[in-house]
Image (tube, rainbow, N blue to C red; front, side, top):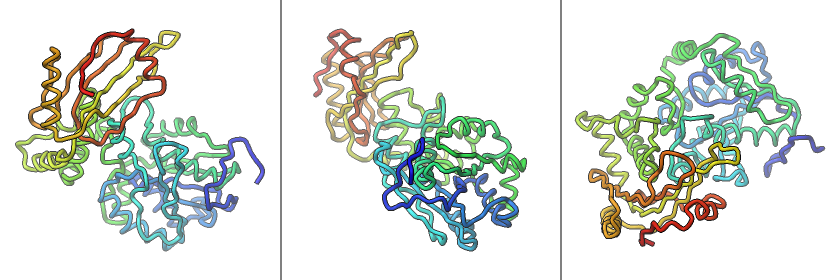
Amino acid sequence: MPSRPGYTPPLPGLTTTDEVDTFINWGLGADSTAYLAKMLTDPAVHGIDLERTAVLYMATGSEWPETRLLVEEFMLPLLREHGVRFVQLARNGHLAADGITVLDDSRHPERLHARGAWTLWDEMESVGTVPQQAGTRKCSLRAKADVGDRWIGAVTGGLPFRQIIGFNADESGRCLKDQANSKLPGRTGEFPLVDWGWGRQACEDYLLERFGVHWPTSYCTFCCFPVSMGALPAHMERMRTHPGIAGEVLRLEYTAMSLNPNAKLYGRKSLLELFDPAQPRDRACLEAFERELDMPWALYRVRRLFLLSGDGGHRPVMRSTERIDIGRPQQLAQRLTNVSRRHGIDVERDHLYGRCRAWLRPRKAAWPMAEELFTTAPARVLDKRDQNFDKEWQALISGAAAQLPLA
């Protein structure tokens, strides 16, 4: 096929073709599911030629169990009945160069593939962070939009196509952002729920009438947005229904906050502080969290740089994370405490869950500044150092003498 501006080479084993020119993004939630179910009552009336259409699902790896069950009970049979091409995709690794995997591509899908080789959870855990509320939904762009774009680009080879997105009529502002973020040539975004005037309640009502069940919101178990969407009470009820999942997410947040106390899952609120140990269902979640912490821990050296650009603006924060030792939390905490006190450095101890932290260079009030700490945390975080970090670090601290001989 001739080269075109923005053309993406085909994925291994995939033949570029113009036979498919309509792509439906399906996030499994109430909105996109309502559109899909309604459209399949009469595809032609809704402007869909199923022979030239593919429904895309990008697996993030942390979908709620009830969503997967509902999809397999009600929607996959519907897709099979109508012979809908259902393509399930996932990332292969942290880097774009790692590529994507087609988990399944079938007109008779039997199951939902919940995860691929690399998930958003893997990404968050390996770098010791949680999703950020500020700015764009980068995690969604990386795990969903970019993955879908790579497959669509390989299939269409730059030819014109339609992409149908299930934004509901209550969130029409997202349509403008979607159009602005579009990168593929020849793309036309369509938002039928907005055109129909179907808000979230209308979508839920349709699915309740159609299938006789309440269709829940679809999002990752560790998503940071329930609080900003006003859905925190329902989210916490979901957590209490799945204490094992709650324990995992609590560990993810606890690890992130060990490396950075500001890394609370919900901005100013942490998930941990929302559980009341006096309540039996909350206590079950906290007990699951304690079991999650029963693993090897590591002692980490964490450094951050808060630098200014040439025009005085804030540059992206740079970070270096190094694993110094591995062992049991009590052992590592005692080592950090002994060395820190010999050098006159205060130590923070979390006697309830085991973390120990010592600050060599606390964060200052104004940029530019450097931050350095030693902390213990579950040993799931990989060593990571941003490019040119050491050079920038030395330039800023100018040989300052703060050291802690733990390495």
